[in-house]
Image (cartoon, rainbow, N blue to C red):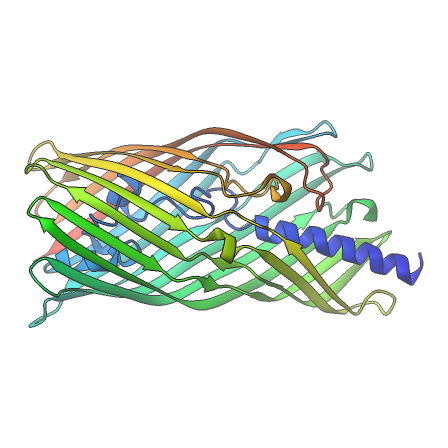
Length: 424
């Protein structure tokens, strides 16, 4: 094989890898794009209609102004278990394969405490923003062989927040923290170079994040809430990159992916409490995917061969669309110990057909939630319920990937739960 042909093959593999790397952002449990619909038990079970409600310590990641509602000390430990009912890849080579990893656990926790002599509450928490991955085995390739592709991706936050009661009606809050992401992916590693087999391992990155929020009582029964989340750039560096060039596998020691970011968001909402038993809430959230995910650049250098390009750099267009998410939720206090929840969340798939891949499940659009909270004692409360997202199908042909005419299907069921401890 000539050096020129090796260079072309490496460039083709790089373009495919760049597409895959970005599409792996939150593959298996992506919901509103790659964002979860909410954080913490009440937020999730009300369909993410949380910005005007936020009243537990998970407000650190929903609306930090809501921390001002907490008096005393509170800890919330929350988790979710995703069951992928249908995460499938179908293409023109006769494949119709479900991802082999059907379960994904998520967990986090947060603590908040009101401050002596100040009308403020401060807190700290860890939150899974997204993660997991898809593993697809025994896939027919265009070369007539069978091979695998897989991905493992995680993104999480640790954040500190404070909310203060500025006036009787107005509370303000802010959160600062760190966002961490890591990625590994593999595509057709055992197949000749006609399918551009690649593997990216151990790229990761960490960057600061911040959020601002407010809550304002328009009347004794009606509260307005708003939150602003800044974009966080997350270049992933320090990894390795391998690609197939004919019978040879070339390894690069220094791989990085630039252009990936969590998006800027603006959320507004209302919470109405017509009596002591009922709480109804709505949220509209604008997510600026078009700025966060315009294009990625995959680069790698220091190969173990002198006969291939010593440095790869490939730009891949993503062109995600902005997303407007509408969330509605209700809570009903059945009695002194039990509160019932229900919610609905809708956000149109922000991913263009031309950049869709089988690794991303961000195509989900409708989310239905229901659950309950039970107070065992004045100190302990358990919240649990489910989130169901009905099946969505997308037919696509991504020119950067070796699948030709393909279809991605996704249907998901989440189990959500939270254990809360209150101290006065």
